[in-house]
Image 1 (cartoon, helix red, strand yellow):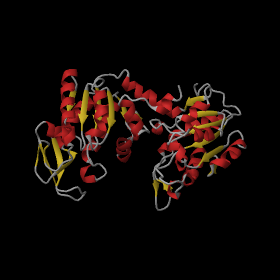
Image 2: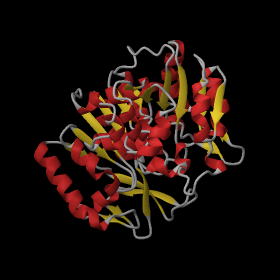
Image 3: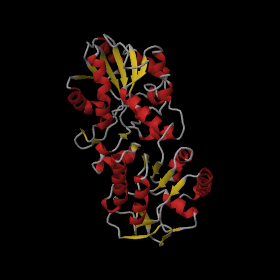
Image 4: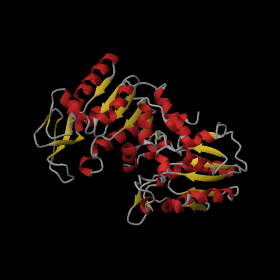
Length: 393
């Protein structure tokens, strides 16, 4: 079923959205509303086509039932403002069915955080049945949660065999991901950063069969350096991943993929924004020093690769970009991705820290697409099936 052709007239649509947005804990104000904004087109489409809407979302990771800091009541005002219409809020799942039944065309209700119920993360069919009773059709527009086999993302779909579909955001996420997974225009460069090899090994192994070039940055680069016999001082290092890295080197060579590692690093004498710094060869980091960013030679090296690319996937920063002392590498890479995009390349920013970096440096409008799903996109590029997507088939 396609949302574009579905008849929502006088239908009550249950939409699973991802409103898991950052909130200032001191005043409960939304700090970044982009995930809410991303769901607005789907909601407005249904409302403008004669339907009413029941919104389901998780928020944070509550451990023992309801917690005020994880209540969705804190975002009702923002949702209402972005939709330019009132949004009713329902705290109790037992009362929700009656309130939902009274919704008129063009009206919206937001249910309290589904993770306040243990049945949500357990994928409980009974809880899914309760949620399903709130509407006539089901729309999943929460790509950021598509890798979770939870009640509101997966099990609920079984109650709507002929009335379940993706929202516009979910469709856009998959379309942009498939553009890279199935037929990327070459040269295709994947930038893979972050702290640990263990977090990114599966995506690297999968990308070896798709990409022409893979740039390695972040803390994980030092395990690669160590595997080559380098001295990395106190840099982040996973000894149990040396064989994995050596296997990646071997596969890259066999498949003709260019693996680009940072030649130099900005190193610090402690893990602190105020630490003493110097630039050294990545394979010759002195004892007592740790790599926290790529160096100027690496920046130039990676820029040349990116500006020659026609397709770019970015997943993970080059260093501790949250600290200005170690943000240059990530900033320069972001600028290079933007320049390549302006020259005609297709660039997909893989959610999480990469999306945060693009936002920090004010380049959100200068790349092709920014994913709303960090973990979901990562698993998609690892070659895994996403339960939230499969449930809609």
